[in-house]
Length: 595
Image (cartoon, helix red, strand yellow):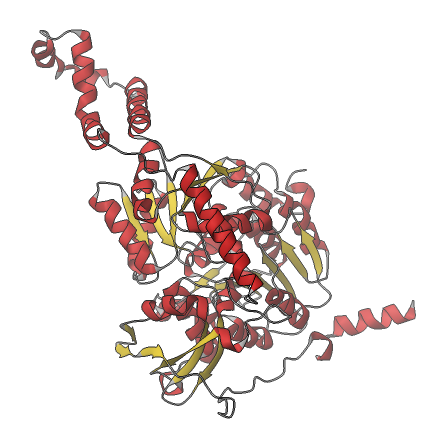
């Protein structure tokens, strides 16, 4: 089946054909006809990298009336990188569509430029929630005529703490709109959004939720913690043509790994939230153009990275949440190509790897970190292959060769080859000459596993629960597992709960389900963090600034049972069924009763 058979108009079919799209992906094949020809809201669940942007972007463009200047379509996404990527893709889809204006709205860029672009007329706005609310408050972004609304990467928006912002935006949009939600996973929070803000949505599922793409090979290496960075270098050297992403859990770790690689001579850069927007754009530009071989990134910063031909995704450390593993690994093996996902781990992380396997259905192949000889062989063969394939410009280089021939005439063919190869190759020979085996032996691994199992069984017999923490019957952390924090910032600083959640998740590299009660007062605030990650949060939030002012964040005394909570009660959400019906909905209902 081609794109024409999905119901797309000639302009869109021509545009996607020129982009090189031949056949629709499964999510596009199922979603596009439903969106164009149907009247229902829709939930689309598919793995990362399966073409979800075209699945909602193409039919939205077809449904928009571009002769009007008002905003009719809205796409919400979690990060500025994804916002820019979606906008770029949709502009390409509109190559043959007249009068189309699609505006990207995101933080970290000039608000004045975005205001001018919207005022000129933007039929479609692609936005991150925080900046969109700023523009709504300024009466610039008007949602009263939005007919089509997309929540892209909905699971990640909630993980980043955008729940309150989404509530505000969805309440402001017309009730008679059509809403399409796309996500790689379907946690309870996403289900709640579907229940609260969507009208009897059709659910489309492509593949197994949380599972990885079948064309990605998953490999793990076990080393001692002190050898983790050394193992990373060996793996990079073992794949001379690597073009990949390295994922770290925190900004600090990301910066440290990138700086080490750069110092050691690798063509690498970092991407994280502390970089200015101009620097992020510069780094991403180099990476997309292939001028940068390795990008070291946090999960949040890498959201929206859609780079063709990535060969490797390396998990420098496993993420805290299993869903993040599939999101990370999905950066490679795009458009049906194959890719390699590599996990570096120490002996203590075996249980976490098994949890990933159990939840996703992925099976890892454990391999040994390459030795020095294997690395040198790969480098040598790659270099010789480039030598054979290089194009020779006979006209330009010919006049320079006579003195070269004269200089080399005393050397044999074998001597010339050895000397030429050694120019590039000597540094690898020197570096790996006395390299040691850094793999954890089977004896060490087995001893660690037995000790962990015995420790777990002993605690269980004594009445202790799993090491990750205690949970109640609903799977939620009980109060004794939470650590309370003080933050010297409050309502006077225009602080909201979403900002606190994003700050904690981004800085400490944890997910929002590790965050408990948040209390925002006039001049200061309190928040709770699960004890298993409390120390990491405390260390990550040292010496931070907010709008140029240093903020004190540290442990606080736990609230006693008698101490009142200052948490403001959230207004009850208006369920879709409680809202006033649109004229079309009323007609549909009366027609149904008549039947």
